[in-house]
Image (cartoon, rainbow, N blue to C red; front, top):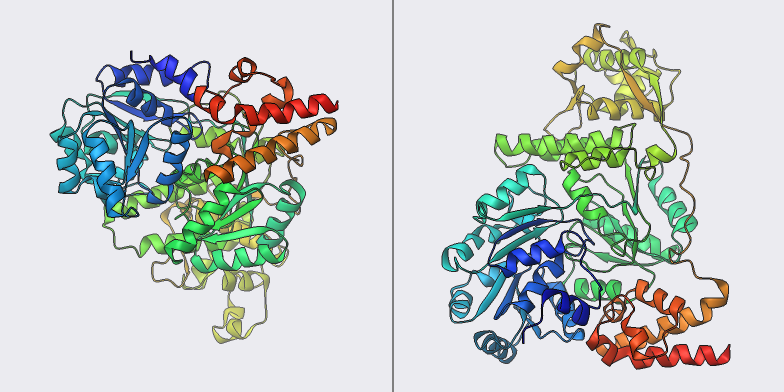
Length: 601
């Protein structure tokens, strides 16, 4: 007799009850409906298609964009007793043939396939000969050409609707604004699908955005004062910066590994595997890293460069704290980031509509950086979500920023841009304003300008902060030729004429850090012996089974063991995250560890 979704949740996955809106999504798919699911990272999206795939007759087909992660996803399911497999280019011919036969005969519960593999004629023919339970399109935002993770192969997935009109489909993602949702619906032909849009809030993540001021020093202080021994991700814009930062962090005593598209596939896979399976690893990466990462105990995400959009920022910071324990997202950005991204967008090969949308996305990201009110409220509003009260867990809530009437200084800056011919970058303009005596000042006779030296009371750092905010606010533009020259925009006229007052953020000499966080799962001193023994037991079992430790049990499950100290199978089954198969495989080993400590005590 087929198990109900609730029985599958309890016996296979080891959880007592569904979270909202998992049950409604599962009911929709079990009753032949299509579903568009927007749910934050860590919200339990995968259960929304895994459970109906197990509850319905046939094979659940999951379209997943990352071959590198399929093996771990499948291994995790197999540890639960689910008959799962994948089809991708890493398999030998014999394994591929066995998997295809299992699909054709309905002998497999779930199969993961990359989109480029799925759209091949051979795969389509295989699926047409097979009993299919459902199609799940994971990371569905990849279909949106306006998005930050666009994948051309996703555009062809509308064939699922055309060739398999009776099979339910679920499109799932954590990141989609209104335009991206509309794109997903149109391109995947999901106009009849029920939409399940959960709140975007991740209250356990603390958002912090700081001006770059010796970024390596800032990073080092953050890691040593708050994140010693924790797992995290550091994002950089360029491959060279990834390599340099990883090498430097290693020299500082951290276990840091690089990850970017310029590395060989085997090196990338090796570093990703170490990150997933070891403690205390910091991965330094370009945005090539992260989609589909299931590691629950990532305690921090640091951006050393400005993301191109709020979607990218939300997606990347969302890789922290999937276990719902406190995590930190730190972004360091400066004037050079804005100039570089503005130039990249102006010089891109996209059409004018594409450039305009990209510019709007960058402007929204800059707005989030420069805002002086609650960051979480602004972030959620971008995705159409509302937070009634300030969150109390972002830097602006913890330490309210200072603002000042910068009208006079802004007029000086704008006048300087105008009088120097709108042909120079921020560095030269600051030298003019401060009255510097340099060869370049003398060469262009900038010491004869009326704005020469009028801003000497402000430091170089203060002027850089002003110029950064003027670009972010759209009062200054950046040339598209790659020289970084600043130019006046139409929006600056009222300020130049003295008709408008402008308040800017004042950067503080020292940023007030949030209270330092030790390890998230606070363990009493007298329990540390048992805690370490449970972790060691988990590590040995993970190595034996060739999976990351969290696939055996999450930290939250180990902590519940520590608190409740189960000594038999029934007590073990009462813990969250332990189903029948995991009890059978691992229960005895952990009970023995607990019994030994109980006996000693």
